[in-house]
Length: 386
Image (cartoon, rainbow, N blue to C red; front, side, top):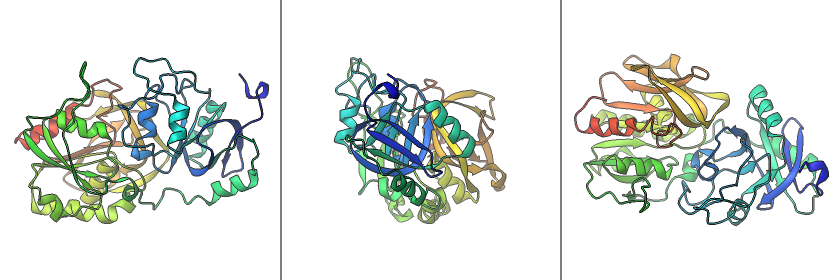
């Protein structure tokens, strides 16, 4: 039902340029401010909201049917939602899915996340594409009373993601072992009992399904916090090092991550594989630079081309920074590019089993287009060139 025919607005989205959207609030009440992005995925809203890479961001969903399959305990990528808030076109309907264990609004409310429905998400998305990801404040008040000037001020005062290290906020507090593999019918998540190689995964905001994919590919996984030193990594005597996804400005996280990666590479020839922020950390460690994108890549329909084979993969992406391929040093080549805008989506060293990708091969929009990257990582630990 159009907002004009409904009750008094109970939520307000204010942008730093003074633009204001009114809608219907659901989830938690209160106010939050963050960078506003849009995601074009048609499914996976629960995974998106719990993806640590969305820390510091409010997510606008371009697909209107958000909440229609409910929520469940298996699809969380981390313990609680990390995205600051949610913007949708239509209010969530009563869920209809055999896996549903609850409603999206209740799930958000219990986890302190604010959402707004009844928004012209097409208009909002076009504005983000044209002018870049804005800073925004999102408020939900059942009484419908909003101090709009104060909300706009909060949006303008948001510091932004440039220069912000968010990996330290979403990483694990201490190391742990991971042996859960990818979901399989009919028993759910089996355990890895016949691992071939030991892998240390550095958690900059790791999604659970990435760890599952490593386990499914044959890895005995030990997860270390983002601040792990080279000494701590090498103390586990791993066969390979994995660098996870995560949020924030890669240059800020690189202040402590880059020296660790460089020291590991100086002291060992072990294979290294990075995803998303891990890709950017590896690029920085090798001497490249990263840049802030206009509105980033967020969705599950992004075509990526592997240059060596010409193969095109349909991938899931979530990043607001990118590796500048023009700054790649000698001995490092671009391996993947986005077919949307030509931006860098992968690198590899020419003389060592070290590689990374910007997209998320653990997600399944293809549905299995990119899983070969995990297999390539495992093969490189067995002596097969990456």
